[in-house]
Length: 157
Length: 292
Image (cartoon, rainbow over all chains, first blue to last red):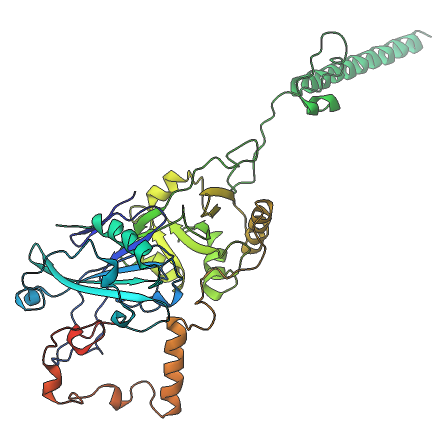
């Protein structure tokens, strides 16, 4: 089991999985609803299928390729200034996840058969968003343990 | 008369020298042939036949064979690959830590070990970049380009060469794990079994395509010409396809690149639209406008 470490995030996905930890360049054309330029903290993607090189932070471009047995995990760090907001305060690492945490309505973009789960949490004072997509809502009792196994190997500095 | 006898003696002496020279040359040829294992007298008493090849009377002693300069030599005399497959971990040319699953996947992976400075590699970079190398026989084959790490390669040079749609990983460890002898080098791995189906080097993409196609066929994989880059299941648009459709729709509506409506000075819903949401979902306004 190989390890990836970058930006204070460590992942060690099972054999055969893809993973990447990155921080893309900020797009100067993107403005937040608060009228400021976007900030792009580190992002980690873990998947049990071949991740396309070009994809969005929440897996756009990748989730469309998912088949029923596929799993996609995105860990997105938020700006440290948000650590004190109600969104993150008092929330610890949310895994292991429950199969019933997943719902087709939790997807950023609804794709037939898929289901998603999103959680916000703080770890070591760093605010994170966890976004997980499974290829089949019906297979959630099979796929969510795989998700939990991959998440169990995630570490934070 | 005396002169005639002397001349005759000289001619005889000259012929004698010539015959001795020919005999020595013949002896030298026989000695060299014997060293090569030709063994013209070995079929007689006491000869032990050790392999079917030796019954042909050809070369029997080990002979050092070399490939052309620049072409790596095979690693196994039996023609079998000598490497176990591994997942590939390293850095992208843009500096991201990345890992590509190779073993235990549901697809075949073609690992293309290339260098930014190798002249022969240029053809392969071009083939992958312009789409010539985007189809290959195999089981939903995925192409992964591997270069050495930043200690041996310029990440900016690799970034310029790396095709946008192909996973490119800089990893010296991968070179070591796969015992890659030189650039360019190609290894085809069957994901479900973790078996290396074939490996080798060639001077052009067409040669690699043919050789690996044969390796896939020998392994019983369908020669279906699967695209190297995965496509969305039938009826489902991929991200780039959706982006292209959106661009087409916007252009049809008269909204092109740089159109003012794409860069609003204020929010459509007014300032209230910027209020934090209690339970944001990805892509929602409270989600900081991240790319999807």
